Image (cartoon, rainbow, N blue to C red; front, side, top):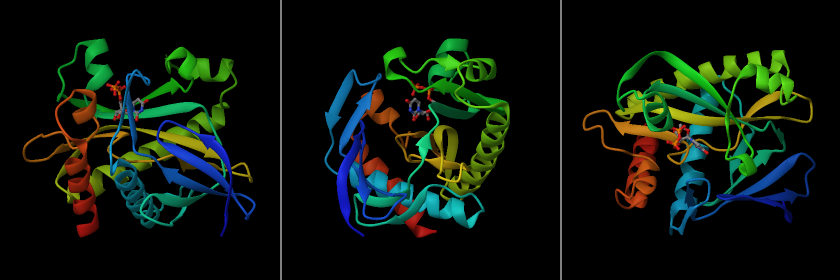
Length: 236
Ligand code: UDP
């Protein structure tokens, strides 16, 4: 497999074409951003940690019957994925109140929710990724009714699989964000990444943050924390 032209450079990843139709080469970068890019830093080692953690998680989801765009890990910082057209939605699942949910609705961080809440954000940097509902998605023709239903069904399956997986690692899955794409056959596939950058993970014993809140809230160095998540993932 040969890496070819750069297709897209995002905040955390670069995407390249390959010599195989429908297969893309992803390189994870060391850049960390928060507050929609207002806070930005280079953190040595972050790219390889997120590539390895995402690869582990996508493999474990596959074992549990949930397919994704992930094909294989190539190196510490690179992986191969199936080419998809990303649906411009950030699909957030919340099991425990935290972050913007706690702030917006004045619910204390750490309060368990009665059931998993699914939220949709319109992935549009220009608008700061606004929270939208299903009518907005239909009116803006971001997805069809059937696609929204399928996305919600897969998202609930991902949530349960991740809750079970992280429980084995003594980690509570507070909330997370996933993205979906359409592959060349028009099938909806889990895409992007699942890592401590996109999940809130709390140690089951201590409630310590094992995620990007360490960076967002200036609580310390994310590298040893992400290493700890990877260590626990590799142990099982
Ligand atoms: N999230 C993400 N990318 C974003 C926004 C949120 O991966 O652009 C994840 C975040 O890591 C958390 C969940 O989605 O696990 C919910 O985030 P929230 O809405 O609470 O926003 P935040 O407090 O991170 O601004």
